[in-house]
Length: 278
Image (cartoon, rainbow, N blue to C red; front, side, top):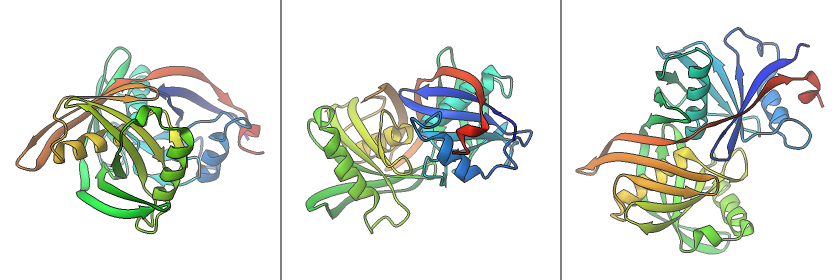
């Protein structure tokens, strides 16, 4: 078994392992178990997701596959797409403007000096004011899917100061609630003003709080606009820094939904076979 070249990148604290599989270097490795093992912290490299670059599948410059640490492949990840876009530009896979094929549909991306902007789509919803009992607490949730990635948004006060235990308890209860049999990402959001949100996210697949969530930022912004709480453009404070979301909203319809923010290179090297054979 040969070592596997990788790049580690961070999108505001969302950390990703990126592997270029256009030549099939992962074809003889069980991809789901590989993702589960190499994303496991302390015993392997560790990451929020494994991102696999492959040949284009639907007319884009290349394809991006997104596999969570639990081994399940999902539609896409916004922050990962921004990191992968910068990786693809740096490695000559695509130009500064590109289209990425994903399971959630094509994603347009534009790379700048230290980050990237992507265009997202609303693929289901929004559905507002869903009343649920979650872990013994009555909550009002708002649901929307961004480029195939499902989210609920819960508005609360003092989000930045909420203990991690609170986010984990409520986030896990929402993520595993029978209303969402395929699982869902839970965003806890506070409106600071008409152009500023504080957001914390419990992500399915990671099954824990992450330092940032790009599609979650878009979901929170869209729901906030539907409720008349915010308007474009928006800054979203997350534990890992700040994301930007902009859109056009008229007549109850959204278009030109964009997500922007930093994307950093962390390390490049090779994964030893023992990284996924423990």
